[in-house]
Image: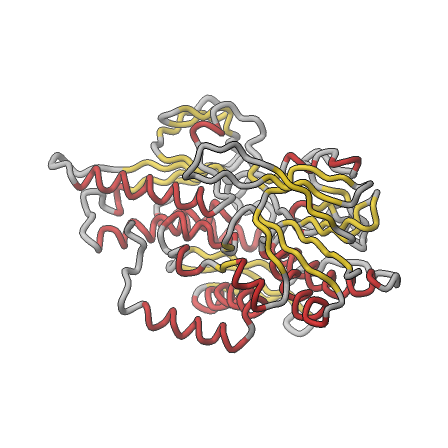
Length: 431
């Protein structure tokens, strides 16, 4: 019987792994590869802040799982994993509710010989009162599009009002990469909206407050990167609050632990991550306090060698460090590349290689205004980048993701199509 490999999660890592395995094991008939996801389409998660601001049209940049499966010799099933039966080697999938009917969700079982869990992470609001009710998270395309609709609604209401010029107050909780990049992208969007005639709210009246509980922006990155980013944000007009933990979120603003009230009509929570709650104590698998599955250096879960986990949902030990591998896109890419080789060895019962994280640097995009980062490697050493060159490297990260999924030729055609569409489409999504 053909070996069944089931991959749960169609994010950057899971989709790349399914594509690689489909092109090798699936094409040769050595294994049956099945990808499971709760959505029909994929969009690269680091781009969700651009979807929220309207700089990126998610419909134009999404990938369809069904088509990708056909082109790359794997299967796709739509569903949401909700349970695991290790003794029977099957997972329970909840059918996604159909918006056109009132029927209750149903569930079905899907068998596996090898299971790979790559369900990513969700935002962690740390139980802050009012955060879930009044803030928008940027974990999914739907959430990003919801924020964009609310942003446009503010502008359209202001445009219909003949009274004095209006303003808009926005707050972003968390000054990590997502929060910082979103703040810059929103300022760029404000300029574009004014250029298209929605000028009742001028760019000068767009007030953005970036709130960070730690002592500086981009706390996970080196200070030599965070300092120029902080200064650029201030020059652009962003109010940056550090050492300011949010204690409560209300309908018309939020309150810090020091008692300061920050008025805002649009609120985004971009601080902290956690793995999906269903992973906690999943049929006896070991998990940590933020629901990540504990894995060995081979990326096998600590209590079941036939179940692998990687990416943000996995707590993978880091060599020569007490910390786990950081939840970053480059880590998921590296792990997917390793697993594409490891699973072939696993089928034949051979020893598996261990994963060793390599940090190739960090790049932060400040929309069209600037970009800052560093590159690390055997040939480059540790090189600081800023401005146009840094932005080109930042864009290349997405192109590398596309090449892994589509190949060089199709990615080149997509780049050409993007270039041609600039003259026929608005520079900002206006709906």
